[in-house]
Image (tube, rainbow over all chains, first blue to last red):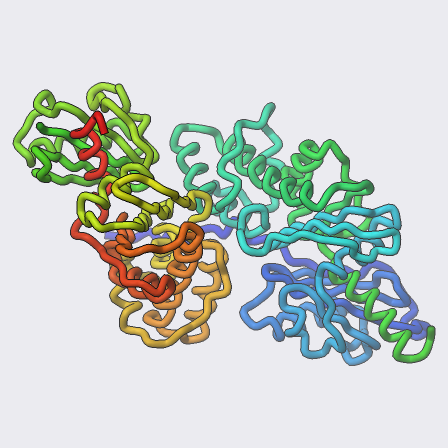
Length: 296
Length: 261
């Protein structure tokens, strides 16, 4: 008797990447700062030269945050010829911000996301929605990117990237394609349970067994997630301009449904919005270095 | 007078046959895709066990989240549907007449009912979050590669307190995996999980207040690791009756016997 071993595909796995954004004459650089955003699911490092994005890397957070922090930073610097020791100032942020050993300071991800969103989208931003791996934040900020108020869900997986990972594995669609798949229905079916991922998963499974196509189940699941996220947003209050940051920004099925429910369009990002936290941290790092050196 | 109570929960259906106030049969089975079919099978099994036919049963009362699937629907034709809270109170009063607080923890719901002379005075429900129901322990058993019935006994072997930060089932699963990686024993993790769910249930129960006697019912009451941390959290002793998972069905059967209650 032969045994067939079926290797389960990891549909939840999202791609890791690094990029050098612009050629820079590093010899003439005044300030090289970096922000390291250790999220619960993804870690991001952004290196800035004189306040402009130079290179970055995005990878999954490993079991030991300290190691991930070092890895993601050196990956961002790979091929740039720049050494981590040459960074003038590093700020850590995110869920694992205290676990960035080479950071001089740690700043909350709320402040960094507001600051980063201000940099990416400009001074007209007033409401930032950050949907991360294990939490979701609605942040109100002023024309300088300073936080005025915020609300956050970090207790429940519903309405976070983690909920999408669970769902990707359930219906067997790679996580990067989920949003598109969910948008391929003519009309959204009624949403599944929007409070608990475990219950939403059970409901989705029941719908699949009833013979619903995956696209329709995906639409019901995404609609529930969008409902949940919009609840949080409306509690903090929406003021234009509205922008979205964080890893789940890559899922158009969520972003478009949130826009539809709010009847507000989010601004188009000029840069990868998963980097908002890391870039905010790098900008704070630059300012802190200037203060330290008496440059301003 | 012969009556039947059917409690159709999120996971299993329970039936109690009552003859002149005495339980003559009990049966339970997992609820399948077709609720009416599953419930019919359980009822038939209980009737067979009691040695009576459906026509001899004068009244059938249904409760639980699937109660409306059998109300006035053949072949069960339940005469009445009552809420879980009402059935919990009625059933608990039958098994422990001095009861004042009922805690019912099932597969997907947790409930607290304040009872006075057999009447519901107040209640509180969690039906939105799996972390406050039996599903929590089940999901964690999977992460620990244990059978769900092994969890309770294992937790009782531990005397260590390991804090659990995650409130959510999904997040707790990741936390359990990292605890396994940091070489925390399965006994200690198991205890941490039971402490965590007991903490959540008790904070819900405290909203209605705790008054003795306190009775714990529902499928989770079968887990020996659940009562001790709950007693500690609530600072009270808790009674777990025999056949705790049938108490709601018993309550429904009792209500069926007293239509003019």
